Length: 425
Image (cartoon, rainbow, N blue to C red; front, side, top):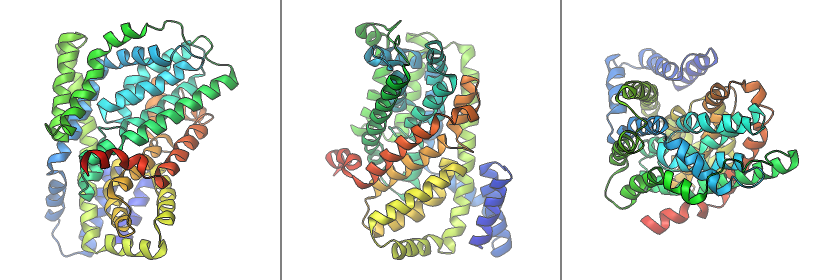
């Protein structure tokens, strides 16, 4: 049954059937063709898949990100980041990375980060003389930080799927986020020196204190949201509601850039984005339930442990496997289907669950910037008015930097585990 389900799912992927529909149809084929269960069980499992309190954080974080985009928070964050690094050659691309890192601590979504920051940064980079395709490729890559630095929607999904502590996963994301951000900043600064780009990047830069004052309410938001989680005041789900309320107050009453007529399109966009993710989660839950009834996760974990009998070889194999998977399968679906299987094998080999979850999220995040289905690429290309083909000239270097960081994170676990150990253990 599992072989047939996987085959149907892959065939549907190949003919461009939407991810959630492909997973759901493959599960229904398995349920109807290889079990005695009535089809009503499919509806039951779809409901059970969504009947989990932590998942409520997803639509709220998506809504918060959209509110911040319209409310002018992203623009103020760009001005703040530029006041820090914008005065050096290559400072504008570095500003893009730094802004994405800050915005990631608010939105939890790479696509939201791409649209919100890209709408400001890509035109600015083009006006400063950078190639359009380079600006789009950089924005798509830097926006990946949206799912690595907490709060992170994929980390919520991993925690729910594997019963791993979501607060620990959140705080573990800071180390990898800083490493990747620093590596990207170093890369673009060296690149600009070689190409001779960005010699006038300091033009129009606000003084630091002025930019800090303008961005003060935006910078306070991660403190409120993450402080509530780590201070034991709120759960991640409750913190997502706090983020929405904060974004509405700042956008409507402090910055005054959100008007009542703006709320409907903001909510509509958020509902559509949330529904897509929730549909994938529900379908993947049914798929995973059928695999679990056949004992596939246990058999796969046992095979992986026997085949890769030490953690080093297992992590290398998993990273290569997930890199390929990330090219073709949406991140949320990959986590929900694969995380229970791979995490079980990792646990048997003595790999910390939080460490492995972070590795998995960072790896699959690369799928957002790799063809043919990289969602960040489509979003950045749309904002920049360019094509993914032109972006491919610049993407390999950025992907190489991210993959190098992933290897470091895989084999130097203290980068990921230092903060969780300090705070929770």
